[in-house]
Length: 341
Image (cartoon, rainbow, N blue to C red; front, side, top):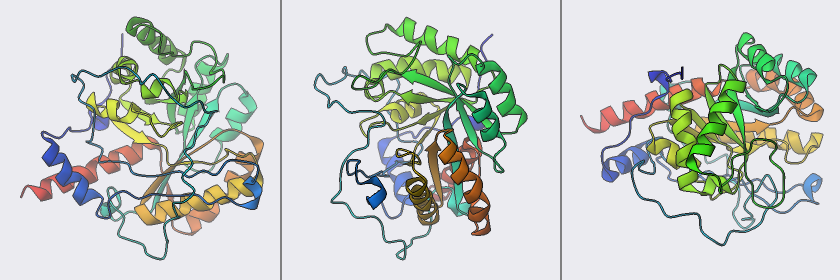
């Protein structure tokens, strides 16, 4: 029997575009924030990249019943993870801080949601990740032999559990067995997603492993996310391409949808990871919250073990994705209520 996700993960949808505009204007008083990461010497061999934040209100969506055209025929070929180059955009000046928007209005400390992807292939790494001294979210690959056992480990540790669903990327990278692809029928896509949820029991949601091609295809993502709506209720868009429509489709279907802000270990290097953690702190301080994705590499786990206590001492609070989603939803509902009084 399929599980129905709890009401705490459901997000109200705005009745009209104008109403959504009121919400967005109130929640994000400074408009779209572009969060750029400057290159350092340690990443000189990588292309210039920025991680941009222009996330709309949780209510902004693609209508679930709206006819959608197919994926554009011409798409750039990129490697995973894809990060759009906009080197001319400067990082935000942290000294010019504004009052944090949605979620921070509750008076909480700046919150950080850590997500560790690609969990399951290395059991020892999964155990080490689960022992991190903070609430985190672990995304488990469904094709891992130990996926069910590791799912139980994650739940027992009190962390959030996600299905880390393999999806088709641009380029030649292999997303792994049972991946979702744009040439599959809606029925096949949904069958694969249901199989994957059965392999990761107790998952509260899903995020994409690779997927830079299929997440641009609204029709395919609608088929995929209809199953997520039945099985769990939360979708985290890993944003492996800036052109992803995943979160917008998820909102149109009534799911809670969040988007990744920062990849921690695009470069598996201690100095580079440390720099990304600084960026996480800066964004959380500026906006009130940040979502960071890392992987169970030794270098990443070493850095996190050292950093978590330091960040807490600075006043940051670590939360799971479900906690963050609940707080953001509550904050936006409060803004709605205030706007119509």
